[in-house]
Picture 1 (cartoon, rainbow, N blue to C red):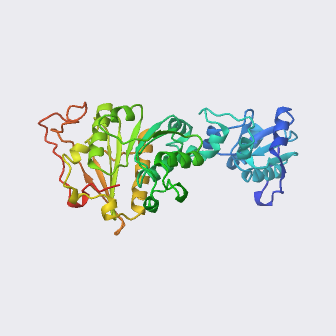
Picture 2: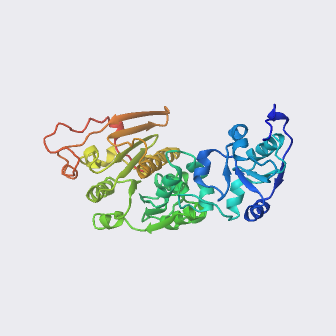
Picture 3: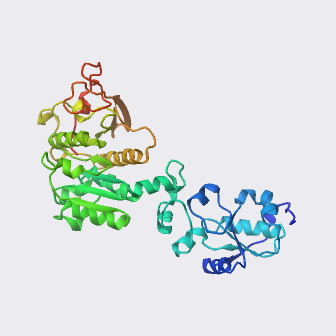
Amino acid sequence: MPATPTDPQTAPSAREVTTAAADALRRSAAALLLDVREPSEREVVHIPGSLHIPLGQLHQLAGLFLPDPARPIVAFCAVGVRSLRAASTLTAMGYADVVSMAGGIEAWQREGRDASGTDGLTPVQRQRYSRHLLIPEVGPGGQARLLASRVLLVGAGGLGSPAALYLAAAGVGTLGIVDFDVVDLSNLQRQVLHTTDRVGEPKVASAARTIGALNPDVRVVAHELLLGADNAAEVIAGYDVVIDGTDSFETRYTLNDAAVAAGIPVVHASVYRFEGQLTVFVPGGGPCYRCLYPSAPPPELAPNCSAVGVLGVVPGIMGLLQANEAIKLLLRVGTPLVGRLLLFDALDGEFRELEIRRDPACPVCAGVPGTPSAGASTAAAPLPASTRAPGA
């Protein structure tokens, strides 16, 4: 049995081989491929036929699983750093022919070489979403769920832009974009989906171009229209979550009513100068938009940003929080902001949270299973004037 070195720091330097050479050795059975990554990494993707011993356990397990010190070994890890250490350590332990695979399994996957996983992800997807795959709450199964998910963004403006970008980056497989407007120069202070050369272009077309360039895994469904009572049910049908980035009470009520009827969660946000607010409406699981705002306030109490302005980063912050809530809903992790109104003040850098309750007399959601029946003492909690719904 090979001896254990007294000091790994004195281990000799290791030789490297290319992924092509390592693959040839594997196919000819001339060498054993040794995976020295952590178990969570191997669960995501591994090279068929490779032996797994984490780097930190080499000294304890090498003698048991590598009994022949003369057998050639190709060590590999994620990018080729840990495998160099492993090869040096094994050489110092008395193994005669140990090399490290340069570039690791990431280079192996980039080149389209044989790799296995239980998630159905392609090698390119495993690399693109590698940071997700390392998170236990996401992992391969969660990433596959995101890729199969459908999210509708109503509005490709200040809120919809950051939400769309990060949902696309996260690998949400289908993004529907609803917007009837064209890109205006005044949009570019906050609507980061669009660029100067696209002024005058339909926002849905501009959004599709940006998302396609960011992540080709994402299919964009363009709905170039004004959402209204005559088309809302048809437009939202089939989506798993809706992102509300609208800037009018009329559209918000229309979207709310259609979503409650269809049983689709809505992640709502709105902004006003230096302020933002965010909540999640889950039909049957909490209040709806009409519980929060039974009727629209006078226009002078809720002007949109074209009249009063908005700090550009505020819709960016709130839109990212919308994307976060949507991903939580899709992955079924964490605690969504159902029955909770999150308030953001950019000037003070503060977040506050208010409870919002279901209205037992709500004309839209009172009869939905899971909501309180009429007569229950769950009237909407009072809201301060600063939570008036501003424009997006």
